[in-house]
Image (tube, rainbow, N blue to C red; front, top):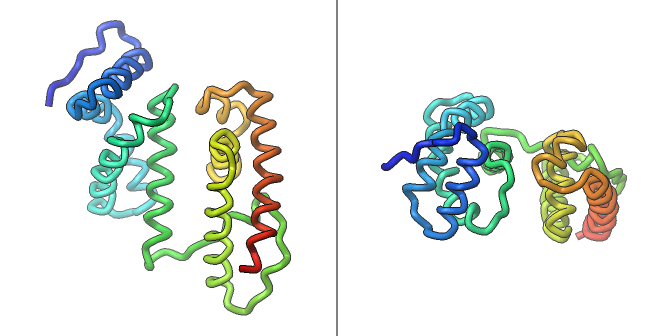
Length: 192
C-alpha cells in the first residue's frame, strides 16, 4: 500500500484531497492511506464498545469495507468526525444484532409514547426500536442526520453544525422538524 505524504502540514486539507482523489478514481490504495491515519482511533472506539480485541479488529476491517461505497456517495467535510460517527453506528448496530447484548430503546429520550403497555419489555423495546428505525428512514437526509447526531449520539447543536456543515439555525430547524415528523411517524406505526 502506498502512503501519500501530507506536504502542507494540514491534515484536514490532505484528507479532503485524498477523499476527492478516491471519489474520482475509486483507488483503494488512496482510501487505505486515508483510513490508516485513523485506524487506531477506530479500533479504540470499537474496543470501547465491544470490550473484546478480536471483535474490535474484525470491526476495523468491516468499517473499511463500509467506507468503500459510502465515501463515494457522501459529502464529507471532516473525515475524522464522520468516520467516528460511522464507527459508533457500526458498533451499535453490531451490538444490537448480537444476542449477547440487551437491546435498549432510545426512542424514549425524545418521543413520548404511552401506547406500549406489555409485560414483555424486551419485545416491546425491540418493536419500538424497529419502528423508530423505519421512521428515521422517512426523514429527509438533513433531518435524519441532525436528529441522529443530536439525540442518538448526544451531540450539541454546535457539534452537529460542525459535523454536517449545516448552519446553526438550519440544524435547529432540522432537529425540531425531524423530531416532529419522527413522533408523527412513530405514533402512526406503533400499532402495527
